[in-house]
Length: 71
Length: 146
Image 1: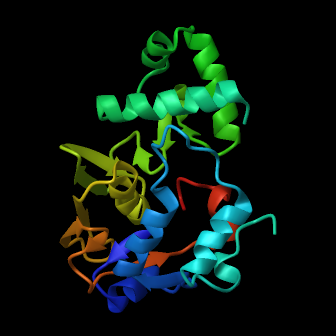
Image 2: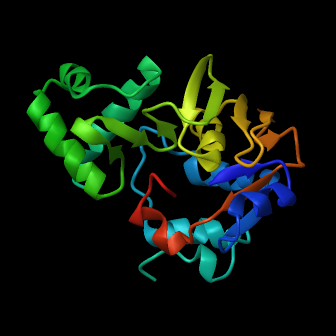
């Protein structure tokens, strides 16, 4: 899960491997804040699979690539 | 996750933030009023539940989003420097601390340094791209590679 300067840099880095998913860094920040914002809360409880999937779905991370295991 | 393991998990995370690095089992045992063996056994259960990730010799490799070892993603937030496990976790450190921050990394392709300020949950350089190689269904097959 890496940051790159551009799509060209991703393609070169892949070196022929099948690509995964590419998203804008602003969207990554949005996802990270939704995913991790409760991590140090005294009332933290483990996220459920469905709860995490709901975060992905709500932010538009659709398709098989973003489908968590156990569905 | 039972209440004891939840308390151990929260204590471990709190100690991580207090110290600015991964705590040892002895350090958690002192504040938890238990012995090292109990901490290690609890950490093993938390590892199995993906609540943290142990490395070799039972040390904390990841308390996501924080990394217990140096990585390519350094984050300045809350008056300290941290390591994120990946780009996602680097932003996650700002999120977990509820702080603005600064991320320092380098492009895995060309090696050029990248500095990103995070203010109000937004990065100041919108030109960068995030690539996730492994599908979500396989993230935990090898979480360090992911």
